[in-house]
Amino acid sequence: NLLYGFAVCRMKAWGVNESGHVVGNYHYCGALVHVEAAYIWNGIDDHSKHLGTLPGGESSAAFGINDDRFVVGYSDALIAGRIPDGLFRERAFIWHEHFGMKALPAPSGFTLYTDCRAHAVSSRKSDGLIQAAGYCTLSGKKRAVRWDIQVGKKITQTPPVKR
Image (cartoon, rainbow, N blue to C red):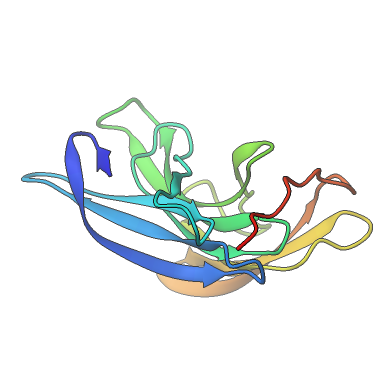
């Protein structure tokens, strides 16, 4: 796998669901560049899917996946100024193949300048509620956070790959 012309120098797996889908991040290394890239892999094919980043971001990592293939993690994102000298912060995200990567909001009491990461995601309840857990950094200290995310009651699934 290549990104920005650089090869993967290591790969980490952080989460797996009941269907065997794996999420994690690649580390692309070059002379002046060290970039992480979130991925999802179905556990069967030779290639995984790069999940991208939030607007302006260059790095991301995926840490959790549920059985409906909702993925959570973090991506850096441009929050002020312009690329390349702007202000970047880590933003927790949720991703699904039907809508892509969406930033999770900073919880009440945190600011635009807070870094957040989501590490685990629950199963989708019958009313469409998904919960993600992770942390945000406030005054140099990590604080546990839970996001309540409302999604559609029904997400059309692609059929599972037969093993």
